[in-house]
Image (cartoon, rainbow, N blue to C red; front, side, top):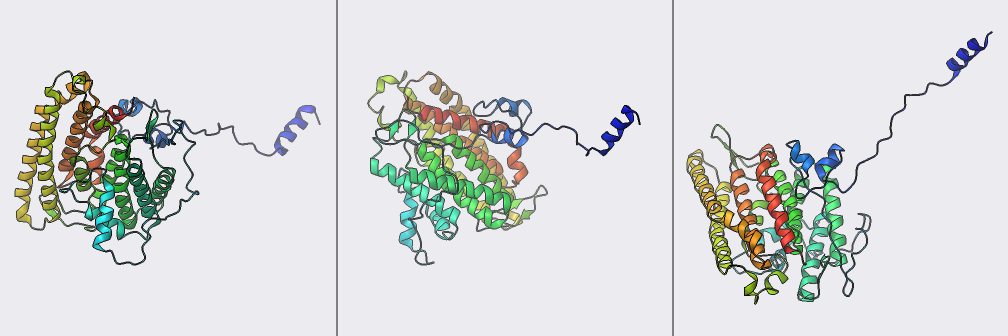
Length: 413
């Protein structure tokens, strides 16, 4: 047998080797959610990455990162804990399944750092207390209470550092566990119970991020909650043919109403924004700027009440005969929102660009933010579906850009 024949026989006896394939290596973990899902490199532009925008995709934003400061040390802490590091659930562990009015009233005070008589969060408090048996909700509540109590204890003075606002380690741990647990649950068990937990948690997540001054992440939670809300139809709707579609899950929380109350009840950002510049009238290039901001804010407060009444009407929709009047009211409200935009939007953006007073700039950005919330809520109110929420590409881009602007203005320099 020749050498070549022996070589061929040896090749036949060797085990088959599959063709070489390059091992998959995931992209950077700091990119936007959309690019990470697509497994492409993200340019990480804010508030929306250019790769998503150039391909007409909706950029779903970036993961929330809490910055932790300790008293006397302005260095950032170590990385966030893993879900295995379970914080102790010491707050609001129910001894009875009966929810009392006193429990509701006390818990309702934790959603906002500014306590106003005419703004009520009792419905949100009842929803939490009714679902306290769920560990995810209890972790989210634990984070909310720990953060709120931390701000109250420090009186908002020694908690502001160059790297961002202070958050207690307990609040941070509970928040991260709640977010991680909820994400896993929505992926593994996409059902009505998970939707209930998600919407209850979204209300607390939005409150936490707003108290921290991170409006970009707050609106990521808000937009995700809207998708879930309309996917499970917690209000009646009107079909394209004008037929009333009954509500699928009336007991699910109304995240849109909560967001309007939260943003219409004053400036809920870091308190130093309002205190550090009170006496600094010379910082504004024009004394008319604060007056315009207050007037724009006042007009939005009136519109907020109208939108809440409209949403309450939609919730009670039963008869076919109500549809025409309901649509007419919706058109009127959208017209008033458009009028507000034509009157104040350009001026608000000019104030943000040319005014040095952080308080005035933040007020202008916050008014634009509330206007965006009202508009997107009314647009979706009657006949929205999950696809409708996803289709609001331009509005979502606008609201994310405005939220990012408010977050940047609110940062301590």
